[in-house]
Length: 185
Image 1 (cartoon, rainbow, N blue to C red):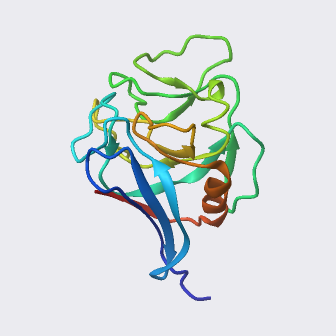
Image 2 (tube, rainbow, N blue to C red):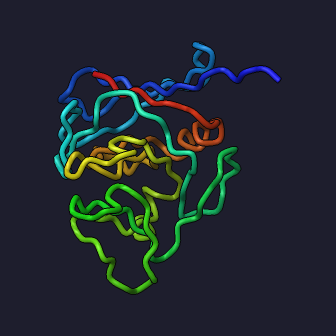
């Protein structure tokens, strides 16, 4: 059995103050999807992202090994976890589980605070999404959390990369383990 070609997503913005960029997907160095127009952070891009600063982090990161979404599995190759009531992304820098998905009994307040996201309450952005492993393994408190590749809502994000759903689904359905993303300006 041969070694699979590396999969790589590139998000290229015209500068660090940009709120839009172009996304392409390549395998074995050959473009297979894109370019697609995407939204990035409302405050552009930064190599020194901090929690809540509205920037998209610059650099190269792995994509999480599990994909997520409020909608049923759209036919992706990677494991898929359907988001349900009580699923939060822990964005509290004081929490020991900072920058991870946590399930809390539906209707109960989570044991963490900050700007933690109740994922099930964002039915448009989080219909399907991938975790961009920025500030993961280990997470550095305050460096930033919850950076996703998700459905576009027609405006800049709080730091994520978003694209129209049809294009996002093309990308997510193609992903294999070990895929990386480079965000550049």
